[in-house]
Image 1: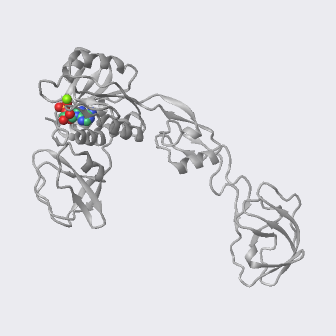
Image 2: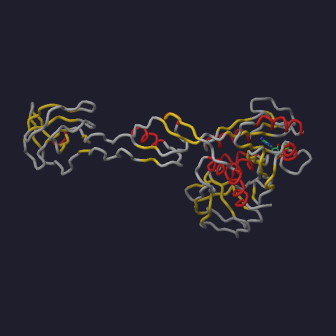
Length: 390
Ligand code: AMP
Ligand code: MG
């Protein structure tokens, strides 16, 4: 049995970085940038007004000063003349500042009568001008190896970058194994259950930048397992679910080995998730997850997400954890690292009473996995504990 940390290190060694592709900005959300993106323009491209009001050239004018309104500038419509002393141009937010203008007086601070304005008592010192390039200038860079969030997409568009080079999505082949499994929507016989793990894992993997492919369920025979393995060509990562324990029907490792799989480890000192195995299948990493639904999902969070990050050029690191106070006392931990399903509420972390690894309803209700180190002593209400947000 190896530690979670050693297992993760081995998985990083098995993970290879993905190639790259160019995608239009509409498809770039949540993709990982593979090459720096460079601004092609200044923003704003010209000095512009930050307010609706009047552009004037007299920088020192105070309350009571009057100006003749000689024209208008709106967003997308510049004023072609220039503003002289005692003149004003009606201006709207985003409009180019007319030549000669040094300041914008907001419309609330002005009294207008016909074509004349008088400055009010409350005018402020602010010029309400956005200088050219005050957001960013040509050459501004978004550095590669970041996952693009909505604000990045807006920034890229504003930088006039219409397409970006990103890492390809890792294709993950997901194989459920078991004679008892049927797909959601089917009518299970009295000794059958619905395959759930594949769907939960597919959602988790997709959420973390992968392109999951759910393969047909493999039955608990070497023939069936081997024929489903034959469908994994082109995958960047193969994930099997179940059949990894030591029962008579746990044939995944044997079937994979007969297809050329080389195992790197089997069994990790964690709870849930002990019967985890990993290795290489024709140069493609293969992770064999335990079949119990909560074990499979916890291993997905703890191992598969960091593996995807590594393949997507985001570095080799365990998932970031956080700390919060415990809402009640808990017992000391045993010889395996424990990922306890818990709810983080306003008064702290509540660890679910039932931690059996088959209980998906408890996992679905949880928003945290509290991490208890091997032989962690008992903890009391108010103690700060490490957890993984889920
Ligand atoms: P195994 O590791 O194959 O012995 O499976 C352990 C437990 O997980 C058994 O109760 C299986 O029925 C269940 N199980 C295995 N695979 C899945 C799956 N894809 N979805 C839901 N339950 C599963
Ligand atoms: Mg099974």
